[in-house]
Length: 111
Image (cartoon, rainbow, N blue to C red; front, side):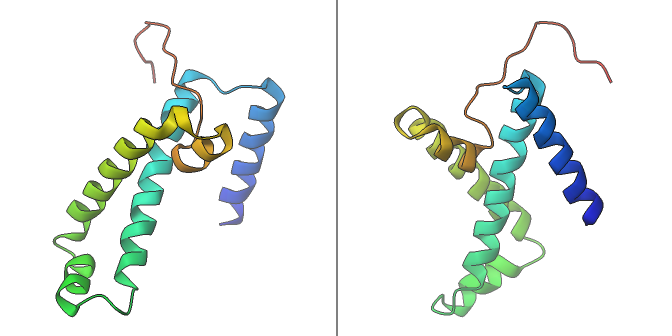
């Protein structure tokens, strides 16, 4: 865990030094951050005491939790993409990972 935190801090320093993030990093962030939000929302919903037992069972079922999380991610991303131009940049960064749209140079990706 300490290694992950250290790597994230290093990444943030590099991003701040450049003043902007590249298209590849923007696309990565705009993929990963909504997935993290979707997972957090799905987990959090399963913790709500007032939910009926069948709903909690669905949210914790190993068979369905991935599908439900995927649906939550899709809705989260669609809603925030629609609202993106109407909210402050800091909020877009919080909910989507970046307030910059990914830029691609037209070259094929290399590994």
